[in-house]
Length: 102
Length: 201
Ligand SMILES: [Zn+2]
Image (cartoon, rainbow over the protein chains, first blue to last red):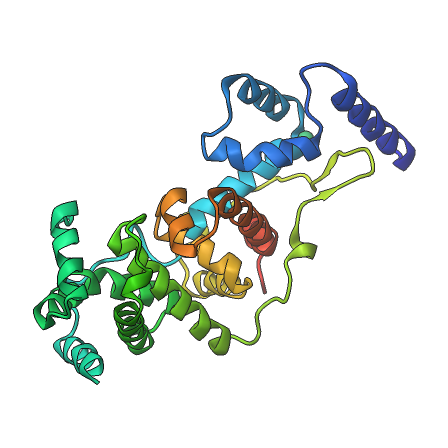
């Protein structure tokens, strides 16, 4: 596709998303993304949001990479929550208590 | 570790307020392990984390009047620890990104997202199995400005919920979400060569 055709296609897409009812622009999609991920989006907005995922290649792929980033972050330092030791080292306990007595 | 019930907690705090040494010791033994584990995650260093926990308890004991009982005592302690850890991080990593504005997603004048097509999206396994790339992922996380790094730590790594994180950082839940989203977006941009499977060499 020529540069001009690509630009025209994007212009058309932008106009469609902006003016057709029940559509979100990509910028609006971005604003809703965190609420969607947190499960805080009301049903009606969620439907509109999910429709945008279906019709917009850019946002669909962006979101997949965004989700993958979250997964990778969660496992970057090993799996699951931090192992919690049963107790703190005794010398640390004593140091804290001694500091309080000052 | 067993969850402290609300009444145990209230009695313990009353003991602290009366200045009972036994109460101080119990608090350190009871809440210390979790604080230490979390501090070690944030600071990536055992002795720095121990210093941080020590400072946390000393600060907490000095500021007991500031504990209003709105949050759980453990969360309150954690918020002090996070602040201490942030101060240490600032000194530790001067090579951080100053701002993440240029790492945010891009849109054109018609509000359409600019996103190059993805032909490959690496799995977590692909990205983390090799020591070298895992280190690279970690350093990208750690080079985010502290306010963003910490929110990724607490939400996406240590998996506290938004409400708890908002209490720990003393900001609104809305602010936690905004920061979390910006942090994830920035990190996605930084990880993009790895995510796309473009080799470094
Ligand atoms: Zn879009």
